Length: 250
Length: 215
Image (cartoon, rainbow over all chains, first blue to last red; front, side, top):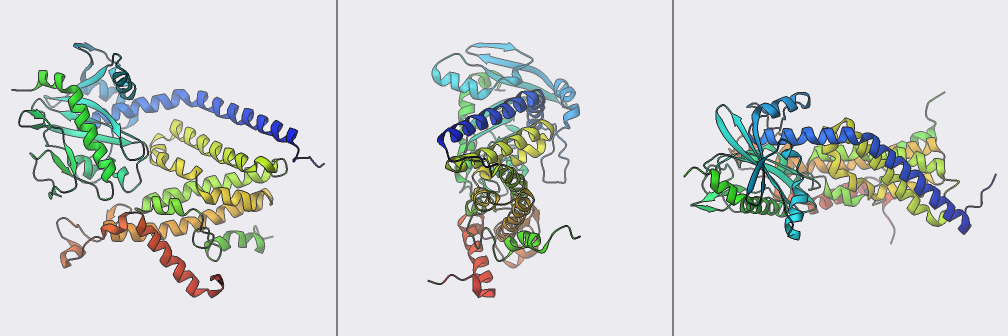
């Protein structure tokens, strides 16, 4: 049986059927998998927040990033994270689902001049308090985000970075442990100014021994992504400055 | 009865050497430049493309008699995009870690010229089994070049292989670095891939002069 595939009518019908079939398959798949995907994303956020405050399975040896396993992360999260705060204008309220706040949306609201919410997580480990702040910015190709854990002297206790589509082997290395570990011990203060931490190409300190220069060594071949990380930290610090002022040990 | 006839075997073997998608057909160069700074990314990309091209070739081949020729490119694009999204969603739901690793490759797979090239040149004119073999063969040929380029770029650019330091530590100057050797930063940036691919093309054509085009 030969089908006349050249006619306009057939072409239009084929296109319509194809769109409906493909659309239904994808829509069905998306709604069927949605609960699973949402849960995975929730666990990931908890893992990331805990990672920034040093609750992870890194150990001392390997150079890789190891999170708390997903099957225990929920329990660990509620035992380490003592408070979840939402900053809205001058008001600070407690909210146990603050970690689900989508920072991207809140920043977009801020740009539009609408009300926005900023989450902060207060963790406690071995009697030490950590203030964990989410960050969101842009790299070379797409979004980058992360968490930064500070103590009350504004010294970085740990960071976690992630990205949507940075180049593998170059910009994507911001989520490598050697890059993230460099931030530990750096201060976001320069004197009493909130300066953030810059990813610097020319800081001449590849081992990162100098901890009071507000700089970490950049990644080769990833200038724009590195600048994106610097900008992201700077903007976040600026945004949270009023809150940080209230917790800073003077 | 052999599983593969001689003609079928050639479908797999040809793209590995004398009809290589990258060095001879000059397809898929974009991703070969973009993601070969390290070996791991090269391998992940090669495996992903193998899956998408194998499955896509079969689907297109099954549909080859009913696809209207006027909109065949759009149909091909929809098929490959659908496949990639399905894989992406399923991984996100059941293998979240793996999906995070693959996320950056998803866009690169859809736009890979090898995939459209093989759909257009082979799957539209051949049966599903042969199309499947053609897909696997071409993605292997693509993968081999990616791994070779990734190997040299990571070794000479970062001194590591699969992330493991094989030449010593460049900062504390151990291993080979103790002799004054330095990593070549040029190898990390994409133009280096062009040079490595160029050298492969040169070597391949010197060994087999029949591949050299007459001007």
